Amino acid sequence: MLLTADLLLNYQRCSRRAFLDLYGDLNQRDAPNDYLLKLIQDSIANHQQILTGETYQKPSYRSGDWAAGADATLNLMRQGVDQIYQPVLLTEQDGVTLISVPDLLTKQPGESVFGDWIYVPTEIKLSKRPKQEYQIIVAYHTKVLAAVQGAWGETAWLLLRGKGYYEVDLWEAIPRMEAILEECLATLKNDQEPEVFISRSRCSLCHWYSHCYAIAKADQHLSLLPGVTPSRYLQLQALNLTTLESLADLH
Image 1 (cartoon, helix red, strand yellow):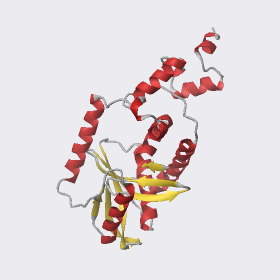
Image 2: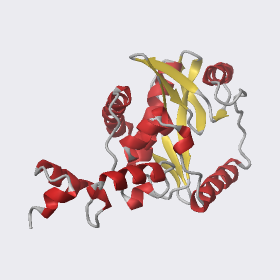
Image 3: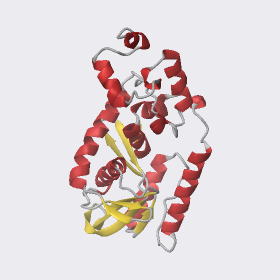
Image 4: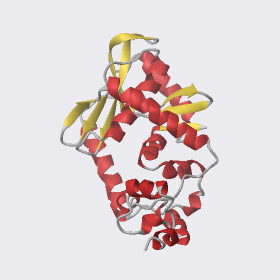
């Protein structure tokens, strides 16, 4: 199994989305809506603006060929290139290939398998806030990078739009990342598809929205009722109130 940082990010938002991204029928995915397309365009423009005037190299490989990308990245790291844009980092853990593609690797003094230098990761985000889910991904990049270069870096960064660099507290973020990573791998290795739950604020940009909504509507899932949040749904489950009929029986 292959686990990418994008898959781990989506797992933090919705375990069902991560499961469907790995095992779902791609023909059932929604096309990107106009708002999502604008976000993608804005993110590309943000990257271009940040990289203007920067000196960097980017590994050359055929899209989707992770092994070739990792080899090309290793060549750049061995050369001691000062800055690498969107490198491909691979390591194995319990039969799973962990794939990391941070936006930037920056060379710093230190000791690694490559010589008297190490690399530290930076993730470029369109957001102005250092969201916890982003910090978890930076910690994931740090973990995979440490396996590749044979040394842990002490710093890792988010580069936020209009706010500049934000240093991620790795001492706090890495243990949380490891716990989330363990949960994610357990979910993705399980044959049981996570339960559907419709949350308009979370689901509106997801390419599985129509697929999940159809299932929820057919099942008359309680998440379609106004005011049924994930936390309230857990409370209802604890009371064995999981259907419209069981709720109606209360009256």
